[in-house]
Image (cartoon, rainbow, N blue to C red; front, side, top):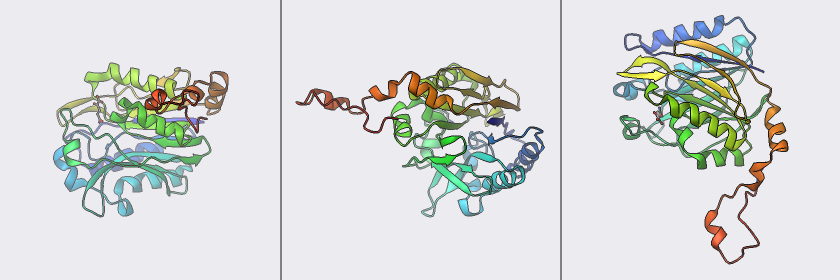
Amino acid sequence: MKIGLLQVSSPDDESPADRRRRVRDRLLAHPDALDLIVLPELWSAGYFHFDRYAELAESPADSPTLAVAAQVARERGCWVHAGSFVERRPSGALRNTAALVAPDGAVAQQYSKVHVFGYRSLEAELLEPGDAVSVAQTPFGPTTGVTCYDLRFPPLWDELVGIGAELVVVPAAWPLARSEHWRLLTGARAVDNQVIVVACNATGTHGGVEAGGHSRVVDPWGRVLGEAGTAEEWLVVDVDPTVVTETRNEFPVLRDRIRDYAALSSADRNQPAREANAP
Ligand SMILES: NC(=O)CCC(=O)C(=O)O
């Protein structure tokens, strides 16, 4: 399968509507036959534009960000991970919600960021955390997504493996200042969960913060199948999704995973609390 990641910049002087048109045109113009297109976290509003979250919040029913993804999916006949957008919930609360759109334009899987970010960020103050993970069956295998800061929390990834995920899309707005963490954690999550990680970062400076770019795709063996630079650019990578099953069969560490370490000290030492639903 061919995956195209467009690492978008969200300059302060570009309106979200102009950006959506510009990005849509770039997505429609790519000359290759792409099977999956991926966009970054909150690219339309700009992640670091916290002052605009409330004004730019979108309802999934008429989300302009999802409309771009659906148009591109239908016209190109491919899957599109829309990145994420500021979602306005029926309660009025806001979430950082990502969505995977199928070639018919319908949302096949969606996820609201569970770990909202509070370090030099107003996200944790302004947004409500999500509370669920899910997986979609796609031609590339069971596919899911988590968002940016979620890379730092292995127990969430345990849940993804538990529900059968093999390909994990990670839209991000990860600052250049912590690019070493970005490289390390995208590789570590691919290896320790034996999944393909497709991580699409934002780039350029907005809201006073420089996003790091370096979008990357890492396979379950830790091989970096492709990595972008720091410009607003495409990264196109060929991936064989069967590498997940091959790696898990060849090197079956997930079978030895223990989810409940507290149970290890319980009376019954003959029943270690190993992963019940390991792949
Ligand atoms: N958008 C984010 O979640 C930023 C996360 C980040 O900068 C970090 O984990 O470091």
